Image 1 (cartoon, helix red, strand yellow):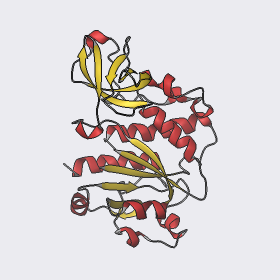
Image 2 (cartoon, helix red, strand yellow):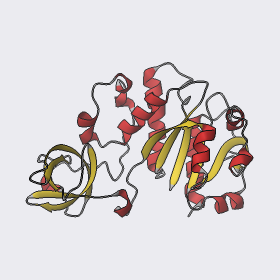
Image 3 (tube, helix red, strand yellow):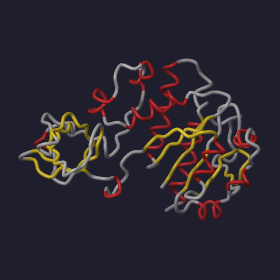
Image 4 (cartoon, rainbow, N blue to C red):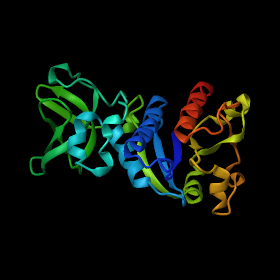
Length: 271
C-alpha cells in the first residue's frame, strides 16, 4: 500500500478557484502516475480547505462516464475542466458494448434494483445497462464490477483486491496530522519530506519497502512546525525525514511539485 498525506492548507496560496482546481488536479495526476492507493487530507490549523480538496480529488478519480450520475452542478467543481485527464486503467475509452471484453473490470453506478428478482441494473459506460445478480449483496451507488457476458450484458461484483493492477486511489479526510499519523503508524512506514531531510539512496531504498506513507507540508510551514502544534516530533513516528529534491534551485518547492519529485524517487528505488 502506498499512501500520501497532504494538508488541508494545500490551496491557501491562491484565492483563484480555477488555479486551486488545477493545483489539486496535479495531485490527482501525480497519484495516478505513481499508483498511489490512498490520499489522506490532514487538517492544518492555518487553513482548512479539505472539503474542496476532497471533492476535486474524488471527481478526478471518477471515470468520466460516471461523473454526471455521481456529481451534480456543485460550486466546487465549477472549473473541473482544467483537471488533467488521468488516463488510468479504470478510465477506459471503450464506450460501445461490442468493444467490451468478457472478464474486464469496470466502474459502474447502480441505476435501479429489484430485490425480489435479485438483480440490479448498472451503468458501466456503454449504451446498454448491465445486469448484476445480487445473490443477497447490498449494493448502491458506485460499484466495481467484472463483465461476465456480453449477450446478455451481465456483470458481477468485484473487489479491488482481485484486480491485478492499480485501480485508482481512495480519498479520506483525517484529523490533525498527529492524530492521523498515530492511527496509521502501526500499518505504515511513515516518511516525512523536507528540504532539511537526508538524501541517502541506500537508506531510502531500504525504507521504501512494504506499506509506505509519505507526508507533505503546507505552502507556509514545514512538517516540523505542524507537528509542534501538538507537541510532537518526527521521532514520535520513526523519525525518517528525506529530501527528494537535493540542491533545489528555488527557495521553495510547492507541495504538488514535492509530491511528483518524491514519488518519482520512490518509483525508482522501490524496484
